[in-house]
Image 1 (cartoon, rainbow, N blue to C red):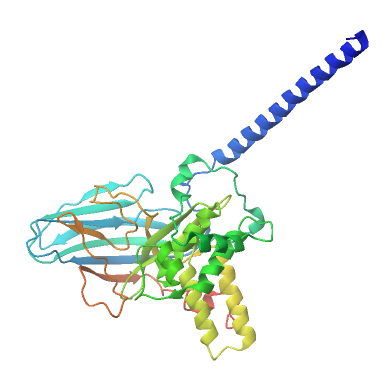
Image 2 (image 1 turned 120 degrees about the vertical axis):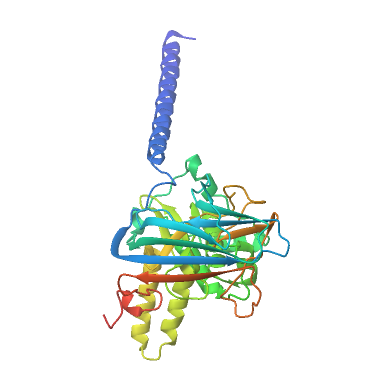
Length: 396
């Protein structure tokens, strides 16, 4: 090389090395920044919603379990509610009749659900389990603003259970629906809102043809089901779209045949877990559309208000959270993992008892049945039946 060319060549190589070092430093800085921004994310974070209108409930919850003839061992797992930002659980009293059994209390490690396990040795006839306790429950409003929501490229490992979607049998059709849900706008909640809207537009509420197991396949193939089918399908859609989701089961704290009811939660930074109730919103919108006392403009206002409340995140003070998540092992272990626990899980000699549905008017035989009494310290609102709970209600 000539001296001049040698100097230029050396300068070029030095510059490239410097540029590579700067690029590597920048990439490392971005990676460290991303890691730092996701390090604060945790699925155990408590709710951040605005609380209002606390109601104290006195709860007397009982379950009557009928084991098969000559059953040697009957095991019953009863979920125990825990305190969080949306509810405070007071002292509780557990008992059983006619055989007095001391339950084994444990917490499963994946979702943190707490259970009392009653084991009856050679039970003679039906066994009654009673749980009496007090719960203070708030309305939770997230007032979610889509532009504030962020969506990490990579979620921390702790979110793994909330990002595993259920395998779908009609995968081609399901993938086509997901493609339609890709938002045209830039906010990270657009696809999730579109998924909720799709579910409510394409599913019919049906307790007779329901899985009772938050089964996305049942919901997608049959286009009908009960609350868990709605929320199980939307949870799987959300996970496929990159959002951590979970189905939450609890009790509606007013008289009804089946007190169990579930909701959907999605983790949306910086709000954390946000609660949604698709099936009850769908029924509310249908009720608005059928109300002959409302004019077209009033109907439209109320429907928009119901949809806005759904998309912004809302949980009512007449619903008590019992369990979170799907497909987990009970503590102490049962014969198999459970998909969900609606009121209890029971096994006779290691064989699960059939899941009853008291809300199914065609069902006549039950392996167990719940009896419940809820007393509140104030008039109990019904936000999915009473239009006055919607901000656009013309009667407000």
